[in-house]
Length: 327
Image (tube, rainbow, N blue to C red):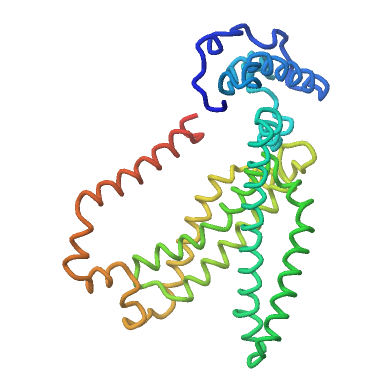
C-alpha cells in the first residue's frame, strides 16, 4: 500500500551512489536521458515491493543525486535532472496504483477540474455582464443579459485556449510553479487593499484604485519579462537588467509588489480627500472594536493574540530561513 511504513531493509538498501561518472556543466541531452534512465531503473528496483503491495513508495536520496563539476572545478552533488517534472504525479498514478484506485483518482481530478472551470466561467461571465455591460447599456432584459453572459463565457474559453502556448513559455519550473507565480503577481495589490482598508480609516477609493492598477500592471510586466528575458536557453540575456528582472524569483517579486502597492495606496490616499466617518464606520477594525460589545471584545483575549503573533513569526522565520539571504 502507498503510505505503508517502510521496512528497514528498504531504507538501508542500495547505499552505493547511483552514478559514479562525473558530468561537466554542459552535459548533453543524451547524457541527461541516460542519467534519468539509470535512476528510474534503480528506483524500480528499490520499490519493486510496492507493485506487489508490500511497502510504501520510497525514493532513496542517492537515486536523486548526480555529481557535477562546476566552472570553478569544484565537484558538487546536485539533484537528478527533472526533464518532465509535470509528469511525476501522472506517472505515479499510472505505475503504482491498482486499477480501481487509479480510476477513482482520475475521476476525482476530473471532478475537481470541472468544478473549478465552472466556477471560473460563471464568475467571469457574471462580472462582465453585471459590472461592465449592464453599466454601459442599462435597462436590458434578463434574456439579453443571459445571452451576453454566454457570449462572455465563450470568449473566456477562447482566450484560455490561446493562452496555453504562452503558459508553456512561462512555466520554466513546471505547471505548479506557473500557477503559483501568476497568483503571486495578482494577489499582492488585492491583499494590500484589504489589509489597509481594514486597519487604516484614512484610506480612500482613489488610493485603493491606484494600488490595484499599479500592482496589476507591475505584476504583468514581471510576468512578461520572465517569459522572454533570462539566463535560460531560448530567452534573451540582453539587456542585462531585463534578464535579471526576468530571473528574479517570483516569491521575492511578490513581496516587492506588496510593498509597492502599499506605498502607492498610502501616498495617493494622503494626497486626496479623506473619506467621511459615515463611510468608514463599521468597516475598519478600530470602528468595529469601538462599537462591539463586551462579549465580542472578550473573545479576542491574550491567548488569541499570542497565537496569531506566533503564526506570523513562524511563517516569517521559515520564509527568511529558506531565502537566499541565509543561503
